[in-house]
Image (tube, rainbow, N blue to C red; front, side):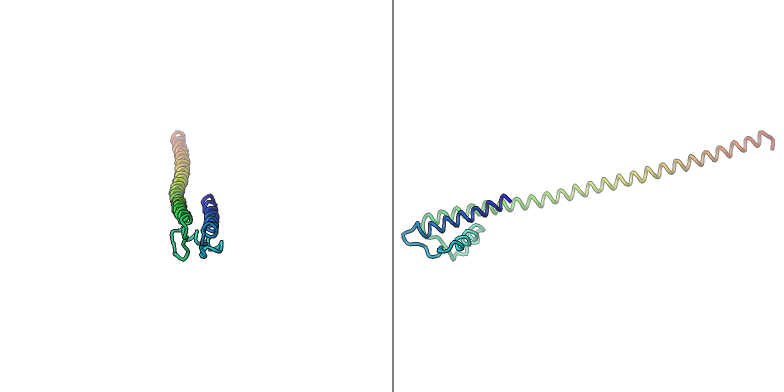
Length: 147
């Protein structure tokens, strides 16, 4: 949002400077910049460093403004590139963190299943041991009674 506002403000401000200077600031007005929208087009093309060349300032001050527009364009394009790169890097890091959290969750589910299995196994062996002891004590009682 900040970069977008910066770009729009710079385009409008620099278009206005070119429009005023190339029309009024010269003894012989530059006919190429007689429309404000042409000045906006010139600023956009110059800021993106395309520079088609159909519109060029003729005055020294207009050319200085043009150099300023080029420098601002390079800075803004660099900022956009950095921001987009950071977004993709953060998304990649977020994906790795999400995958790690899924793995931890999967491990927790496996551990819970293992705990359930161990508890069920222990209950089974406990019941089996209880049955074995009952059967053994019943057999001892029968031997002791002489049956």
